[in-house]
Image (cartoon, rainbow, N blue to C red; front, side, top):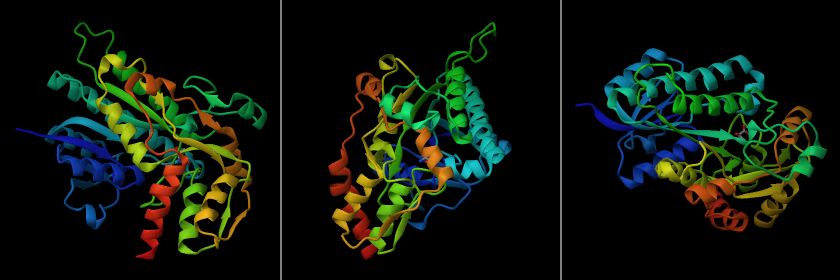
Length: 337
Ligand code: AKB
């Protein structure tokens, strides 16, 4: 008999590591993880790990055939800044990889006669404002406003939300026997901040970079202006959002794509919080016009009332708890060691 597993792609990334740790701690799931990189040694016993490329269609087919994949967290992606340096590669990974996995999950749903749950992290990169005036006037945006992404990554995320919806609702709509369809669910994340891992290749990275540099006693030149405002979330809340959405009863979901957010702050406010914890931190502002343009196109805050109403989303870490109870103590501890 095939073994029932939860598949996590991009498992060695920031969200992946936090998710693997959390799911392994419950002991309820057998985890199958996939990443180009090996799992860090402290995670070695937590999953069956496959070192492989999301673009390797044969390998994906083999995995889906060998294991009974019940739930997928598809985290593998090239983030927004890196995607601008390699847009075609970003498209291949972000769209090509997702498309292949959606197709395999659709086939698997059909074979088992039961929908595979497909959880997909999307992003505030799915939004795009033409200028700072419209960004300021919009304030909190809901899911289907200002969907005009300016980055390859943002285009990829928005399109993959649509693809997920397609496989969820309309796949093989003209077939005489409609197959069992997969169960696609997506959360749009703001900038995520972890105490235990560092982001790479994203445009919200200035927040975590500032914090980790201060704890290490290194100077940091922030690549956006002081007044740049974006929504953020502490990593444990991101994991809660993924898990809560994955188990929400189908009948409670009025949509397949939900905004989630914890707090919003400017880069100057971020600096002030870092300085309050690390008074000797040397933080300067040296905006990079191109990355600044991306941040300026993203909303300063997002409206997550649909997630709160439909599946009870509620972040445990507001801005004070995120900094005082999670980020500062754990980051201090990490670099003290
Ligand atoms: C990035 O900056 O690319 C990511 C994101 C907002 O999705 N952190």
